[in-house]
Image (cartoon, rainbow, N blue to C red; front, side, top):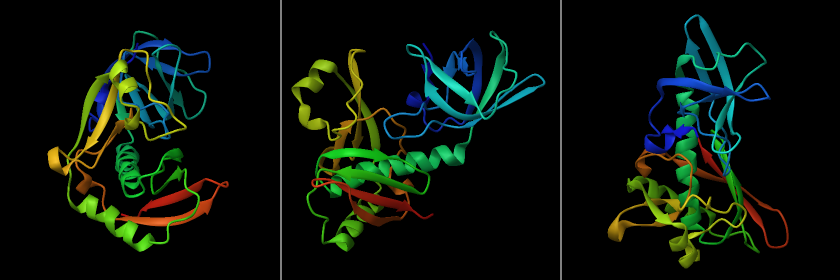
Length: 239
């Protein structure tokens, strides 16, 4: 099992690790990793690995066999041997934008309180699909409310509940297309705001900023019709 350091500290941008395996596809598996694997609408992290006289550019990271995370090179090359101690470096600017955008999408699900049918995170443009028959008419009001939540600089924290607790509280799950990961005995929740200031609480395995004020100004983009009961809402991060 790969130790997921990004869950403990999403702001950690570099650290040491050891190579424990190679994948048949040419990926590298470490004993501990900073690299978030592609999933839940969030792209896999990129960066590089340095060891001795060697260096490997990581194009993305993916879920491997079992609980492993595989780091995929940008192009085929000689991999660091199993047992090699190395230094891993995130492409921090790209990761941080994903963190800002992921938290922003949680806020979008607050201002549009409808079931989410899909989503995708990008560095400057992301989107959520909603179970929504008609596009909202008050776009300016929604954008204003969204940025108000950012400006309130709400704390973003995590909690853990058991699988049974989640089963007993199905209303916590907003996303219809991606079910929360279960089977390990517990599920991670992301909470935005505390006490009377709480605005959102939902299962999520992604990386997030510590406070909403870190997101920056947001802009609502196109709202596209993607079916009789589905609308795709784009969100832009300009700064």
